[in-house]
Length: 107
Image 1 (tube, rainbow, N blue to C red):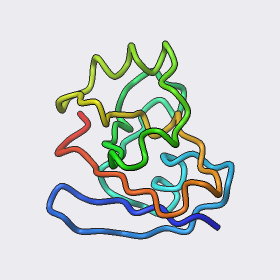
Image 2 (cartoon, rainbow, N blue to C red):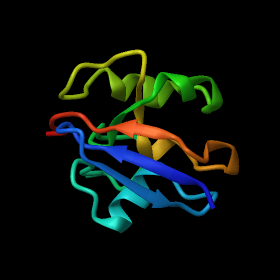
Image 3 (cartoon, one colour):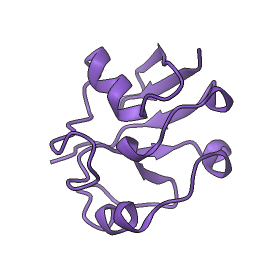
Image 4 (cartoon, rainbow, N blue to C red):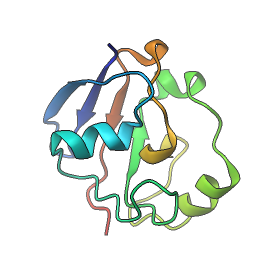
């Protein structure tokens, strides 16, 4: 089972074992990780599950879709080249060890 590391803005880390097929957002919500609001429930309609994916992993993720790209323009915290909506990234076995940083705020 892949392990995903969620890093809070203060540097606190939490590792989660996430079944393949779950979304990064679903795992965080299920574990009660602060910092992911997910107001729309994973429909890429609110940008409140914004995360920064560690650059070493960017090429291993599926490409940003049109809907995700549009929503990333509306994030509260700055969009960077590492920005993703965690509801749009399915966990696969190849993502074991993935690190995502949470923004200062989502809303």
